[in-house]
Image (cartoon, rainbow, N blue to C red; front, side, top):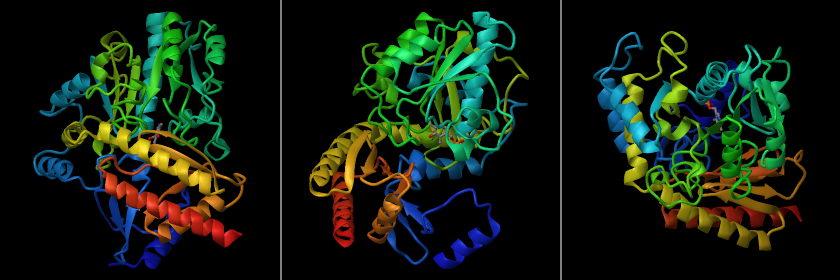
Length: 424
Ligand SMILES: *Cc1c(COP(=O)(O)O)cnc(C)c1O
């Protein structure tokens, strides 16, 4: 097998330099573990940005992939296929919506939601032609298309990619006051928000923020659009992050006191367990009906391979109680990190929900401390990556056991304490 050194040098020489990976090459994965070509084993604490919630190469999902790959992979939507309808019904039943629009990547899901929202704004709300606006939040991450980066305030994601798509109003995340103010504009069609801002550094909003935001939107006839591409599919300890503190298994059985039902729900990443790009946009019929034949689509969207993989991936989440496990292990993890914080000055803050957590490193965002810590964690067998300078995100697969988590806590503890000792 190719060595780590050669694999890295090939990517460096032939690939676009649009990423800055940690210097580790992954050649195999199983459950919570990954291995490099030299056979070193690591705990994966990124889970491909929460796409691999079900663990690497989950046997049930891989069996579905293999079986369908040998039967039928792609038909296009020029014809019906025998899996799409079953998948759409399964998604609707699971998440409590009437209709699904299937796409492939997360960014395509967000684009789809934006298009549905604008069209609904004109055709249902009566916004004058060309004037529809969508409210978004500062420090958002919704993907990489030209329209989506138009309303990003990450300089790298945004700079020199203009001219930009107009029609987006930016407000502070977690500010009900600013939302209320922005909603006074009658040309607002939707409010697009992440229930927890993952890329921004796992920013958890105040309790009831989402519920209040959804209620305000409803009062102004504005669509509440939840981007759950990273937070959804059990990551934060419930099937969806908008489910809040509910412990129900399906979409919180739609108990209104717990469940803030978005008007539009966007899913991706772990919808396929990281096996294949699958995204979906869900909403009820009165919204989805604005999209008619020929007005939106995708060659690969809704293909039978994607549908089989996604059904299996969601079944795994239910059968293995991954939401409950994420909730339980998340509480232990944050408690252990808070304990470490009392001993180690390198940690300034611990936050998160379920198994989407972050540790803020006590140094300036421009320093290389978080990166250096991730290198040291790698040397000790655990892979994590800094996000936004001095923040380290910790998001292992949700199939982790409690003893495995405690092994990981020991690695993090040892690494942080040694790093601090070396520096002083
Ligand atoms: C990853 C992500 C996206 C984009 O998904 P891609 O599959 O990379 O296009 C959009 N929104 C959120 C919240 C994400 O985490």
